Length: 154
View 1 (cartoon, rainbow, N blue to C red):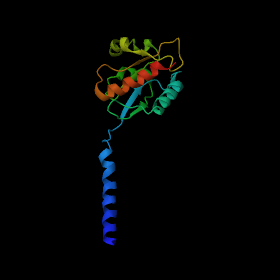
View 2 (spheres, rainbow, N blue to C red):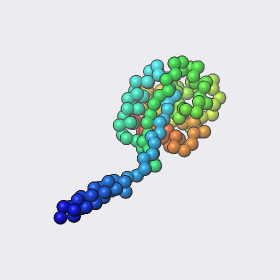
View 3 (tube, one colour):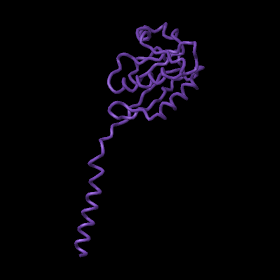
């Protein structure tokens, strides 16, 4: 009887060990969305709040991967705007459309920008947020989810 009890216990332990593996989905790595923005902007603090609120919604891609948002820490906003070919930038948030005036690459993208003034409490000012058109795949999906979140803020 002790042998039977031990065999039953071992069978139960083996079944329990295997069961979570049967139902678990493979975990996908989180996608980090990096935002280029002016950290000294009059809207910076409100944007920080929106980032935290977005993260609080537990945002996910269609494949289940988590979305994380971070800002690029660039000391000089004006000189950095000229270097937006950086492949690590998924979203560009300008202080105003005039910031794009000196940069042809941004001027081309500006018609696709979304005005996020309501999200940063800057209305009636125009605060353009754009996802570079060269961005594709999961990075583009994650970036667009965040921009859509900002655009929906009332």
